[in-house]
Image (cartoon, rainbow, N blue to C red):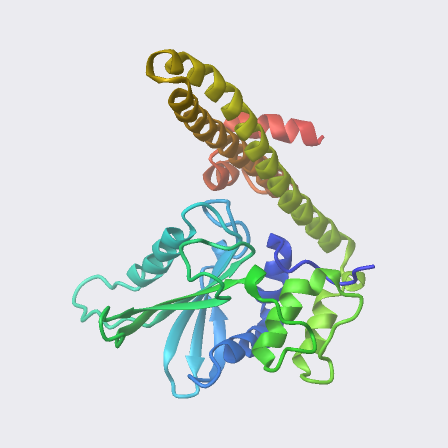
Length: 323
């Protein structure tokens, strides 16, 4: 039976990477990620409001202010869970962190570098095919020479990391193996390799969680599973609706344009409409689940409305259903 939390549930991700008590774990992970480039000596969390449910209610996002052994300051943004237009979304959030460094009055645009790390439990077709880790920088297209070190986005597509426990050679590979498979472990691997995995095991052991934390973790797991199930159902029903509508429209168009051409056009249009409808329904249901979790934490109606986009009437109805 699995003994450790799922680090890619919202609560699990925050529990490992977003707490003061686990800062040394995060420093170790980042130093292994950037091995050979610099050494992070200290870090502090930035926007506390974003450690938890983010403003768009889609995933945990938080900023980490790091200082290297050479006194260099960088901002690392950690992101979890994917969505449509993920590459553009990562660029948007990275740019926002850069813009937020602006100072009123006289200013020479001296900004700290911003590195965004994206954990992806899916494969994005826009990224290099078959590559687990992709580092994006501002560089000259022809020579490949880096033009600026102020922006960098690192994408980690976990499904493409296929090494076994015995095949992991570096601490970074061991980190990825553990994070990808941790919710299936009965024992934590690599305890003899690095003491950091001992502390990770202690922090993420389900048996050490308080009743309150276990309830929050189980809520987070339920939301994650419900969102996935809703998405799968939306795709299924969208395809079925699309086939049905496509056949009807295709046959009608086929009388004038040719049955084969009409059916193909109708099915494509119907499937697209069905999938969009399903996605909208899935997003709405996900916001409802987040509202339930926020209500259980005692958040105000105004804050829940701001974070989920739900109406006051919808939030009141959800609150009544919980009593």
